[in-house]
Length: 287
Length: 257
Image 1 (cartoon, rainbow over the protein chains, first blue to last red):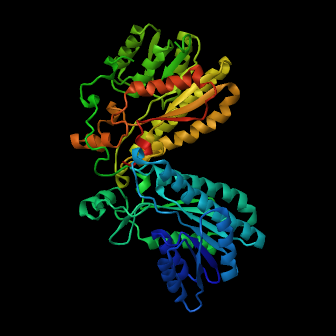
Image 2: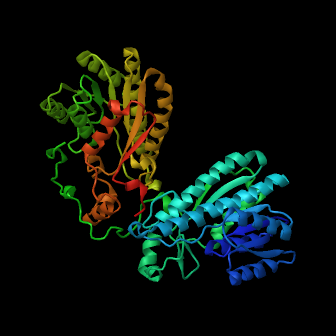
Image 3: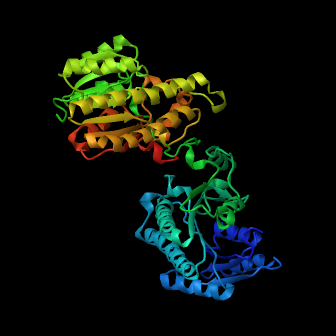
């Protein structure tokens, strides 16, 4: 198997994306450490899943916070349990879309803490361990296509993960000499068959046929991703096949972010501009 | 008046609703003497020059095909004969045809590459030689498009030509810097120019409305919006700006919806 004998730490494993990636890494042969902050049931379910493999080794590690000290402890605990860390997956917290005008200081504090600082500290602690061990490690951030393009109400998600994209590029630059690769996987819309996710579960009327059709109408491949399709790219980046890939940003979005093509109107009620009149002459207006 | 005494050449400037007309007028409004060029529509071109004179500047209409190097040379020579020098080039001539990828014909590929890329190379190279010979520096502003970064259905080749101009602009910014020539490009969004009339995305009133709804500022661009961008690069405001890209699209390219 691609990841036999490899040890993978998944930070944010209890999120929708983190959960799926963890299961795929386990299926690919990796031993798993599941980091969580009190989501015991989900962490336990992942450990059980990863332990099903005959040679599978899996452990859940509870963190008491998301600062640099806790990140250091996480790495020590992980090494204590699995003996080494070859792969680190950093899944962001889920952030529900929220209109710009409704965002508060607390929303921003939280977004920057969970989706920039916390991911940064864990990746940093892991990188220090990899450098000390001389291990050609793999660091993989899960981001979002919202980090590179504006979507409706995605400022918190997009801004925080844009920062992570840059962290990843700079880390790739600096860690290259240690043979550590750092890459970013950026999902667009993901669905588990019933729920729709874009950075978080979208609670609106996405379960209605019309809304789903609206979203998929803007995706060249005509459908949302399964979480396994996101995970497959992470498994590739973690495998030997990706030994020369670093500093990459890989959208896994069915083409969603390359095209403007989308149905519907995001600005309902906005009237056409006056120069929609075929006779409008912009040169009669004052320059 | 930020461009008084300067001489500007604007290619692709004959159209009534085109970006070239907006650029020529914006330059003239700042006091530049302007040569307007287009490949055909000679009557319209004369009309454009007349409009510029009405703004109080000297103007000249020179018809030439930018894909014809001999004609381009003659146009630059004519500009210098008439006005003594060339300070600002707005390389704006461009064409587009729409076709699904599988239906693209070799003729349409040659047409778009010919005008948008080779035509730009011809004009920019000859204008640069003139600017370098003068030793007074210069400003080159190339009209690109939001399609350089934002793919649209049925516009694969057009988008490719505009993306090519980005690399072209950036390379020239390096090479021509020593001659104090800045090279920049603007990225217009949707302008209601005649070139866009056949666009399938604008075919019906519903299509128009949907396109409008994809633009955060809620309206198409006027040629004037584009002209003001060129003036920025051409004026002393743009002294330290080269190899730069200015998107003038009402926010079109940053958003999905």
